Length: 456
Image (cartoon, rainbow, N blue to C red; front, side, top):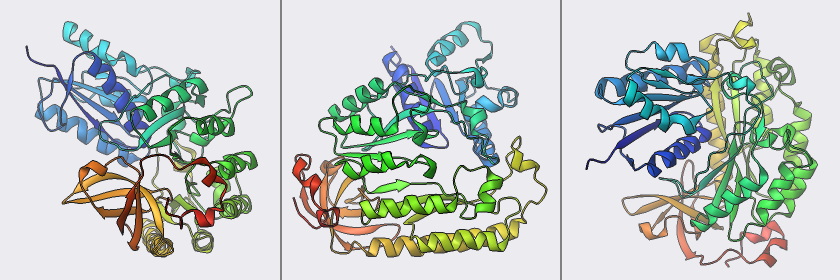
């Protein structure tokens, strides 16, 4: 009997990758075999992105490529671009099924329906009416040694440059018991690190009664066998004193926070409709650095937002340099049709945008190299993730990418390494030893400055 085969292609963010894994679980339980996207599968699922116009374009290219190569296969399109532009996608000849950012559990049923009826199916619904979190469990990940755990969906912020609330709907938090249950399962599967993710991760709990992100972090701290807990991204406005206090007391939350800044100018932030000032952002960074010496602060920056002057750009540049961010993701502002910023008249010239992007990337490279240099000869813990030519690469708790010599048996383990050649994007290290067990609790109360110097 021939096995049914399915192939996935995921564009965009960590949440999309998580949801692809969740869809794969459903097909796996029905007896499907997962194959590479470049092979001839029975079903192709394209999980799309719409964060920029480029995301839309790339999504269309992947859809067309799948149809061209596999005219007999069932082509299903899901994700953010499917949610915001279903008619556009249905107009592509060869698309058989389309679902948006909810009802992914119905995809298998739609595939069976399509086999019976051979009629295109549009399962996209109005996401703005969705008020509950769609439960999607992922007990393990196909190609990851760090597990991603989705804790919330949607966003209520409506920043003027962003289409995502229209693609994902309003804020919905996952039931805390389900989060803890899945975290426990992941640890039982052998994952040493869990990365909390969502569309607006730090907003977790805003729609729950008497429960918030700080409380979730406290409850996850109690998960037996979990070594590391990482928050994929958190807004400055959600780094409350309570959350920072939980981070301070935690033995599991890592020394790395990704805090999107977008701009370092109050006047630009106001036009973006962001919910913080630079004074507040600065207070959060200073507080974090005081409780976690050596903390890595990474960030997203949008350059060339409508009306951005050279002075406003320099406010951003100077702020990032002053506070020594450890890495930046820099994006030139791109017009997102349907957003208020797209209708602003003072769009910045593309040449100016790209020149500013280049300056910020140079700054990011310099800061990242200098940050890594600070850990020369220190002993850090990494979880090796990839193997190539006898080399393994993993991330330390403070998000340094470290390459070591070693075989695949170390993949997914906690390994103590000495940083011998700090650098960016990759530092080199040598193995000190492999940790059998989590770090014992009493070390949690040591001064964090000392903790990395101690070989346990």
